[in-house]
Amino acid sequence: MSLNANSRAADAIVAELESQIVSGKLRNQGPLPAERDLMEQFRASRTVVREAIATLSNRGLVESKPRFRPIVSKPDYETVLNATGKVVQHLLTEPGGVKNLYMSRVFTERGLVRQAAVCATKDNISDLQAALEANEHAIGDSEQFYRTDNAFHGVLYQVPQNPIFPALHEGYTSWLAPQWARMLRSPDRNLANYKAHKAIFDAILKRDPDEAEEALNVHLQAAWEYVRTTFDKDSE
Amino acid sequence: MSLNANSRAADAIVAELESQIVSGKLRNQGPLPAERDLMEQFRASRTVVREAIATLSNRGLVESKPRFRPIVSKPDYETVLNATGKVVQHLLTEPGGVKNLYMSRVFTERGLVRQAAVCATKDNISDLQAALEANEHAIGDSEQFYRTDNAFHGVLYQVPQNPIFPALHEGYTSWLAPQWARMLRSPDRNLANYKAHKAIFDAILKRDPDEAEEALNVHLQAAWEYVRTTFDKDSE
DNA sequence: GAAAACCTTATGGTCTGACCAAAAAATAAA
DNA sequence: TTTATTTTTTGGTCAGACCATAAGGTTTTC
Image 1 (cartoon, rainbow over the protein chains, first blue to last red):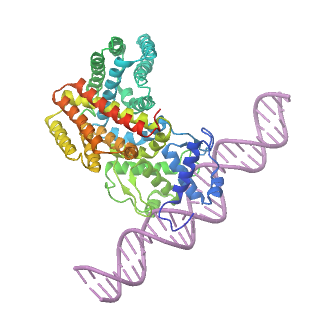
Image 2: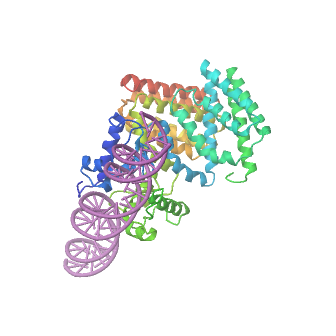
Image 3: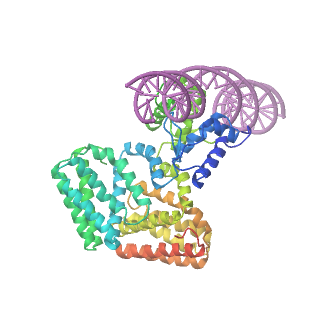
């Protein structure tokens, strides 16, 4: 590529490959061309080709495991959240980081349950009910309970019928998972959580947004208090 | 670095520099060491050093302009949102992308005005009032109105006292700015928007979350309809 | 003839050393 | 002290090489 450019040569390659990915010219889930082919195609050195690929990888437009041909992955909402994961980790280690993230989740879910109470569809309701039942059956098995707990909350993120929300749920789940893992689990806690879920569900059934919000608030705030007091860390 | 590793050599350098950045050993806003120094320090080739730097740059932990020494920037919530910007662009070009993002903003602000109505501090209120007045004075100047409009909404994001929200506001602003720019502006529209802001403010003053939410909902939904009908695109 | 072991090639990861142009630093001139 | 001018540093790019492994093809084995 040109020597006296004011920008990086890799940028052009990134742009072109980006467009080929979104346009589908590069098949989704298919392999990226070999580096040496890209060299020829873009008349650039391997250095810049590799730099371009690295950028695409960091942007989440290709998934590249070392020594394997990168796989193109058309961007979706999950990709975005995923790509941010690494940086988010740093924020969580800073004082108050976990709390901030958790509180933003509480904020989000408060809105979700309100919306669910107001305009959940029949499907939403039945999904919620199914999740709740699975949750109940798993009270004795903490591992399973965690999954069903998560699934229950996940249904809430489906209510707006906006793909951003399920992706956001993915994000919260993966980002906060380490904290969750630190938390002691017991059938007692599981039962309490199940009851909280049921209270939320009932309020949604009654189409009462205020009660639903309050139930969720109690549920998640209690969970936070539990984490906070159990591990006196990241609390303020 | 070793040849027979299962992971990239750059990863180690990235990790080390990352830690030096968050620990402050590398001064924030200060320059990164020269590539050739890093080569020596990590006993690696320039190739991998540069790859590491590129990764840090994409992660948002250093800001690098071509031909200039990269500047370390300690990660904050804004950094995270910033780093995602590039990928978000793609999502916005997809059908329904803008709508999804906009609706998530509406969702967020619905929650924010409720929270403001319930527990806004004196400072929040006065900030809101100041923003509202600036907004009123700018009705005749669409350019200025846009800024004050944005500032008004920005105050809402301060209410939770959670740094995630102001960063999110930054994100919405920059991501949706192109759409906003396409929208026709007129004193008429400005006046209508100002009145909507005032209605929201009044409802918050009255500590009436339902009315505040409704006012905001009307405000933003109307804005969306205006965009949608003006430019028949991205509408579904 | 299908499965397993083997060999060959293609490809990603890394290194060395080089050149250019712009930035930074140092030096000379005003 | 300020402004030009020269020198050094440094980032961007390139070319060519080597290694180890993944992928694909070949031969052997049962």
